[in-house]
Length: 158
Image (cartoon, rainbow, N blue to C red; front, side, top):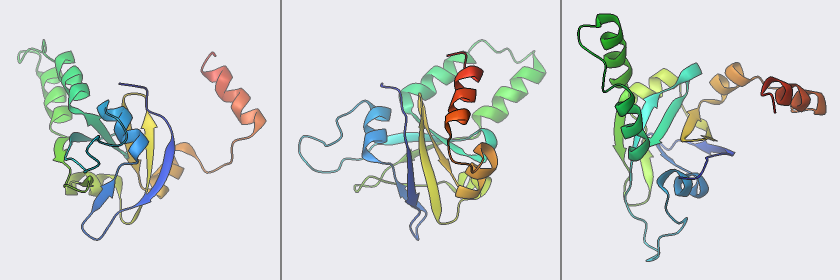
């Protein structure tokens, strides 16, 4: 899978469905942007409650990597076992419809306070879906400036 990046503004339809931008979908699933037969095909992803009030969307392959990180957690370690159980209970598998749309699970939509508009962002190994308000609260609303970019490069120790 290629690293996911980019930011896109989209809308949720009346049935709480979204369409992942083709470039992000291709990179997430490791598939070409257009199927060879030109017909849309169904695909599976996993939604998860993310940091800052977003929804994270993972490929099934990435979710298996996450699950494997917790394989050695023992039930006798009650605190850790409980944390893992709660964390994993917020993963929600979703299958697209034949047109490539994904229904946002109710739990996720309420958590992220998504109503109509969304911001869909690539973040390395997953996609984030934000309500515009939550996105602005988490990242801020200011335009990127030369000074702001310099600050980011310094923070990232680039």
